[in-house]
Length: 213
Image 1 (cartoon, helix red, strand yellow):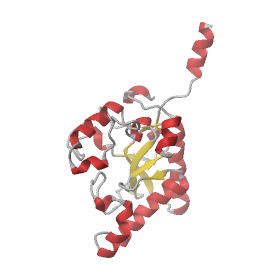
Image 2 (tube, one colour):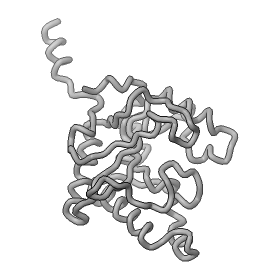
Image 3 (cartoon, rainbow, N blue to C red):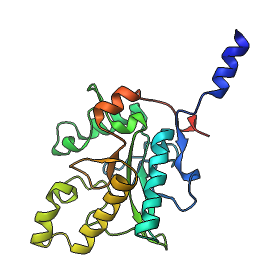
Image 4 (cartoon, rainbow, N blue to C red):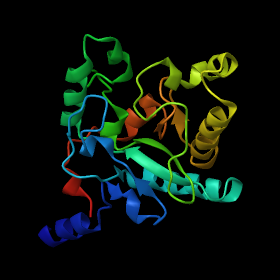
């Protein structure tokens, strides 16, 4: 019985995998491992992009779509799995402010999809590794970063056609290529499925970044 249990444990698939190991073209700029983020505090001990194995495969498919349709572009990751206790830190930084609508409340039934290992924040880099201009920086908490307003800001000149086209390339790679779902508030954020599906499929995690090899 004990031997059987040990064999089952050893054979169990990993809860999280290191995305950077799946394609050597992937680039990381994990902002919460630095003080260069919207609230100026380092909350990750290390810069790693961890995702559920199934979600990581979706990211690889998104890169394959880029290779086929926009050769030279590569994915640049800003945030992936986020431990649940870190989500509380982010929420405490914005609750009671206008920025609160951009941060998932960890005290709700769903919390942040990042904490399920099923959401990713990312952008594009060119073949030289230079980040592509998307019209706003990552984690710009305001309407200019919201996909639903792009047509209006393009018309008014606050976004250029080149910037909007770049957002569409990223969006198509992630949705058509990878099968991800967009959200209306952030051009860089993609969920592996609907919140309801993810909540049914996975559990919220508070594992350390060392949990993945």
